[in-house]
Length: 332
Image: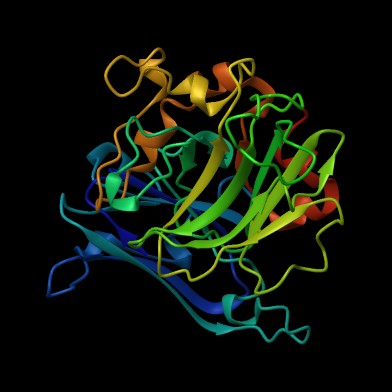
């Protein structure tokens, strides 16, 4: 797992595998690739459990001396680093569940010091959509950066669906906007690879979404096709190739002036005189936006959009299977 120098602390939360040996080692990110030092390595006998008798542990790899010097701490320098998990001799798994090579437990969950608690993800609009992406000027966008894929987990997204026309319609000069009482002409939520030209893996739109009681739920997972464990009323998007970072875009097309919860209202007056300057961020390509930069304005965006704001979080797949979106997000 890469540990970019932009972050100060990487938190590794896992369960002890049923294996002969496992370790976590930090390596320098230069051409030599050496372990940081003798204190940059932790093996199973030196990793303390989260509490007495527990099978879970938390290791922190950090550039902060106080953190790296504490229990289960691993120090690294100010430069880029790599963190390696090794498991030797895992117990056989007759069920072939995919956990055989990791000792019968899921791979650890990785987060960074500026990640929000409980895996919450926020959507925020760029102050100016980069022209390099040739954005549609009639669309307004909010986006989220979910970070690297977390094994054994899924991204859960839920929001109230804006009203749209009943079917295809012409936008000719004789067509009064909002004539059929719609909030927006069209909306969609897409999972995109962050590699120019930022292609969409797949989208859910008002034309295709499964909507229940005016709300839609989307799950993003690493399955190749829609998984059987997903309930019928839930929409699904694939994570896609794990070598590329992801950006999830939610768009409103031609929102009506009478709809106060549109993305258009969030970015009104931008870029020069934003009505909500605390609800936007600056997106500069080709740099990957830091997750913390996108996250910070999220609550301000949600205040404008209300129930139409996509509430999202990372969630254990088993938790979603047992309790649905309510177990992952709580009730709106």
